[in-house]
Length: 428
Image 1 (spheres, helix red, strand yellow):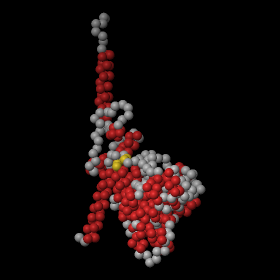
Image 2 (cartoon, helix red, strand yellow; image 1 turned 90 degrees about the vertical axis):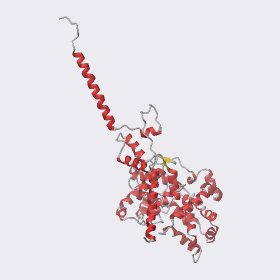
Image 3 (cartoon, helix red, strand yellow; image 1 turned 60 degrees about the vertical axis):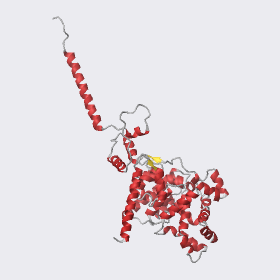
Image 4 (spheres, helix red, strand yellow; image 1 turned 180 degrees about the vertical axis):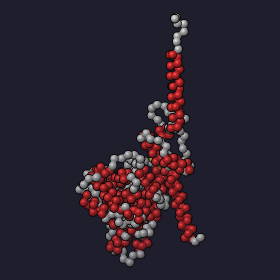
């Protein structure tokens, strides 16, 4: 076997092993979300596939996939941003290298995308649309394809929290001071690159579209964008600034190989970095994660931020520093329990084919299952485990009903027989 063939086989084995690890995590009770976040920030490939992302992304954002939601179409209405949204959406989804099946559905995806952005703006008239938000929404439309209402809920939470400093303000008055942290952050890890950027007079505006659109506008590979979203959804809201710094540092050798290092040459070079087909995403994320651990956002703002930014941070007006949010969880229930819980609320059969398969996967993954209670729980509030594991077999319940009916019929027959007897000792 050639070296290339052996390498490809080894790579496929590694991916299959990673998928098994992730599948074992998402069927545990409870699901360890912190471990999934660590995988997204440190493991090659993140969550690997869109099928797994459809399960994990909602959990990271505090959602139950099986919870009924009002149709987001109820909120779709014309608003002050509708014309701009229409023009932006008309240009969207063309730059992605999509499979042929998704290309055929691109028109429907574009209409869904326009409805989602318009619904968000009409639902809360205090929000502000900016060019690039539709690019972020487009990734959710392409990945979370099964449930449009869940897709809207996830995109809305990202827009309100992760993008809150952009959507909740009429301008980028907070974004510009945040971008000013980029060059000091680069200098902290590589003084030569930082000096080069300062010498040519480059401002961090070059990475503005990267940060506000999470690279969804500049990168053409959907799998690569989804991998970046794995990390962004698992990290604090300012993590895109760390990724921007790591991207520039990864391109150091090419930067210093430029014939001219004046403003226009360096700006042109950096603006083309995200569109590289062979972008080393894993190396960039690993570097960015190390930078995040060395300089957490609060420490970075306090040591390198402008007085204006530090004052905003003290008054908690920087949305990206208010972390973690109220919906942030370290653990969550697995989908097979959530589905059982929903079926129980709907008075449907609890054990479905889906949940049996999830239990089988959990068993194969070595996850210990709590046994059903030996007797009925006492009246009043029940414990967490009892609430999900109390189960009565339909066949056993039916047999018990038949026995009870037969006993009742027998008792009635005896009573009728006794009532028909004549009393003893009667006179003629």
